[in-house]
Image (cartoon, rainbow, N blue to C red; front, side):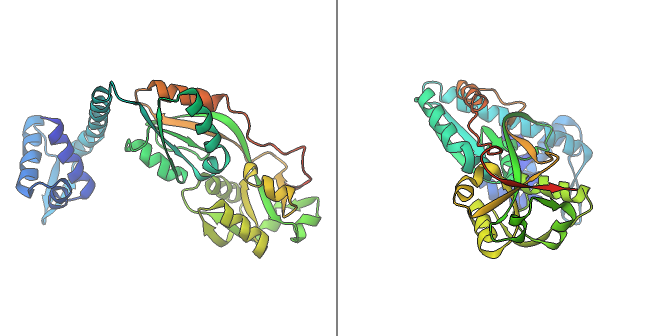
Length: 307
């Protein structure tokens, strides 16, 4: 049994067929079939049931798939580290949209000054995508605001943040000190896309209180969401650090949760089996010491959302 056997097996499971795996790996289908047969003979188990020319993974196959992914990932990391021992270290950082808009640029700036010899690549998407990329070893470390689901990832809350409900200063809510939660059921919302940590937190809050969200707009751009609020009188829930300018310019009115239900953290995330490099440890320290996320609670007039 070799790493090559495991790579072929992983592709067969992922693609659902030997022909698709062969195409993906640029090898012949008989070669794939032989590798699977050799794995089954080596371990003395059946990895797939073959029914009507389709493959159905067995319990033994599922067990091997779980182990094989970790083994291949660790082997690839070993190869990368040893082959690049004398080369410049590179760190791949993944961040969620809110983190990217709020603090990522500052974090990378501070980190690059601290570690000028380390090359940085950064990628931004929603929490779900960042989680998947960490699990697939496509990035080394993540900074997210959403909830991490996988038990294979370590999540360390570091930087405080909180969400606020926002409306245009022309919206009727802007003229009131108190808004009742039940009133939100009649309002239209501009929402982040599915997979967003911000969206998940707010959806859970509304569901726990027996309320549905009337969605008028969905998008992955905080700027587009703010425009929907300002121009089309939609409501939105967003990180406080993303509306600094609009608050100062009196274009957006803020409504806070009276119960502090939307308080949260930006968290560092990495795979539990990941070997922490010097660069990763240094980045974690930079994030841990970063305390400049805006908290405007004393610097602006806000309404209150109450039950």
